[in-house]
Length: 292
Image (cartoon, rainbow, N blue to C red; front, side, top):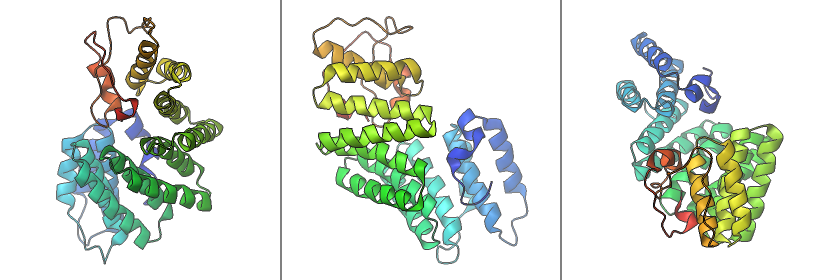
C-alpha cells in the first residue's frame, strides 16, 4: 500500500478479509527490521489499522506493540500513521478520550509533513470522538476546518464526509436550520459521487435532525427508506422511524423481517451494533440526538 493513501480504499478492510490481513501483518513483522525502514513501519501501522476495521483488534494490538514508535521529530510521517492506528484501537476498545488524544497527535504529525489529505480525514475522525464525548463546539471547529481544507484541495470525498458529520454536529448545538441545509448538501455530494452507503447514512442523519425539529412525517419517511436499503445503520433507522410513528399516536407496522423485534436504545457511538440489541418488544421515550 502506498504511504499516504486512504485506509478506506483498501478492499480487504471493507470485505473483512481478516485472514489475509493477518498473513500480511505476520509477513511484515517477520521482515528485516534493521536498518529501520519507514515504508515497513507505515505498512505495519496501516495493516494494524485495517485489522481493527476488520474486527481483529487483538491481532492489531499485538502488531502495534511490536512496532514501537520512532521519535516524532525524526519521523513525523511514520509516527502519524502509528498514532492513527492507535486512535482506532482505543476507539474500538471503548476508550473515547484516549482515541481522541491519539487522533489529535496523528493530525499534528500529518501537518508537520504537509500531508493535508490525511490531515483532513483525521480532523473528521476526531470530530466524531468529540461528538461522542459531548464536545460539540470542538467538533464543529474541526469539521469546518476539514471542510475548508477539502474545498481548497478539491477533495470531494473529504468535503462530503466533513459536511455529513457537520450537519449532525450543528444539530447537537441546536442550530437545526443550518444543520438541515448542511446535511442535505452532504446527501447531494454523496449522490453525485455515487457513494451509496454514505448517501443513505446522511439520510439517517437528516432524519435525526428533522426528528429533533418535530417534523415527524419527513423524518419517518427518510428513516424507513434508509432502513430498507442500508445494512449497517438499519437498526438506528428503525429506531427513528418507530419513534416518529409512536409520537404521532399511530400503531406501527413492522419492517419486513423485523416482526417481534423492536430496538432498545443503542450504546454511545454503536449504531452498527443496534441490530444485535433488537430483541425485546419494548419502546422508550428518548431524545433522538442521544442516538450517536
